[in-house]
Image (cartoon, rainbow, N blue to C red; front, side):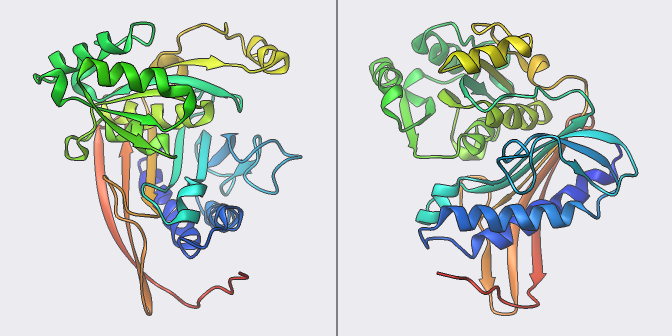
Length: 319
């Protein structure tokens, strides 16, 4: 991959964030997602790359744009796998809540797991705890391992968990172990990334979320030196068959090299709503402001970018 792609991708996430942020708090998640997707696709057309969407908005017959298999870029430049989530947190934006992101992850062609749209059990940690956790170990054992790795007591560890009924046993065990919990309603990509930044106050992510989001989060954590482990959880025979076609055993633990191969990948995200890591979009009359993060695994570079964007016109929102 070319170094120039790192900054090019930020323009894409900025455009998606600015478009979807217009819908914040309006209760219309599909409109917000459509706005982000349209803006992201339009911006991709100017990027010098030969991209193929491996994680997108659905199959070709299910999604009007950014579908799996779609070609992105000018058709010149490096061949790359592209994983996109134009609006990671559609419900978040609809409610005007925290941690919605516009997200892109890319890697050299053939290096991203083509994760099917099913559930994945996940555990994620930052650099200090790499190699110390095990998705097959108990919640308590992993909490103790993270506490030891980060030189803190278990009672000072903060675990992030999606607030779902299926996670009640995880929540109960975290509390019994004496650790603290940050429950989130949506947005486990942001939650996984937050484990790698000390200023977010998050130490570990537990629980079941989307498999495509797991691959996207793994790209970010690879850039940051963190770790994500996952296990696909098919819910029916069709999903089991998809796993078999991918050559993945249902109970196999997917490590970082399974999720994103090679030594290079790029991750970019722009805040749509405010979060622990990034501020959301703000509109200030003739211009809008964004905050983004972009990172590359090969160089270990992490950049935070504040953007100021002139707004040529206000969109016609149909409410």
